[in-house]
Image 1 (cartoon, helix red, strand yellow):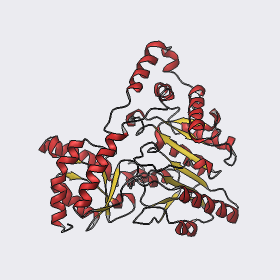
Image 2 (cartoon, helix red, strand yellow):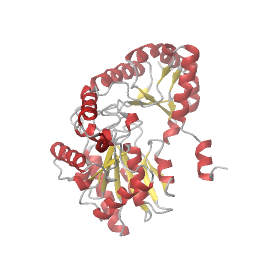
Image 3 (tube, helix red, strand yellow):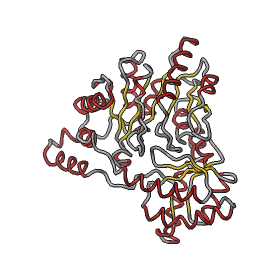
Length: 395
């Protein structure tokens, strides 16, 4: 018999992954061109050519025993130095290699951080809606995830609710900007407000409260909006970054953590996340792709492709009467539903359109649509969305 904790996870498997599998089954039944799967945030543009060129060059020219061997659990020192230098150049920071740990994507990085920080029963906060796996990640270490409200028009965090929700057992706050599922970027004023509240609450309770910034979509921005670099606003900040979306490499599982010198007990904390990387079974980030991304830090995926998709589907759906905040980043729309979100998702499936109920992101009454699909998929799905609009009399 499997463990009780895993039994619960098996019974409540990710709706997103289930829908992704269902989309594959529908494609086999009805033809791939007749199924419009907006369920999974799987990049639909190829990695920059430099990624391939770098990987080939490394494999052809470097010692295979070195490239495919173990290294420090935190990653290759020279790769960590290059990441630190790149961040310093871009954001005016002063990082060095011992502020950077290479990770098996942002998800593994988050788990390393939570394992290093959370004692059983301690609280982690995040703003709803939030990425579905946060609750599971916190539960992995017997912590408790609780939500803080956002304004449902702008999806900017409700700072007064944050201040009310923080208690003596609050250990961390997870933020995600650009946000999954809304595409919203948290403004500099918002980040400053969050930092001020966290400092105030640390002083009030005599505790350390960490701000964990989950940033897989940092480079996917379609406007002039700036994504603030959070370590500059609050000392006890940890940044989790992934190249999955920036370089269209989700399957390669490569990212990094930033733990600045200003963080409380920085050396112990860095040692703790490094050891967590080992004891969680990751051991180290993928060796080849550490080397690859170190040479591709100034590269990024084709933002124009995603922007074109965003503009096409946002303009069409809003013209049909659907309500949605226009995303500034990431590649998601979070659409208000005229009925229960699960009911709407079921109705959309009749049109061969797959969207994810907002209740999966801890906020019912919305659905998430991932527009990192082909442009043709978006264009061909629009008659079905139009029929849904007419069905619910939205126009």
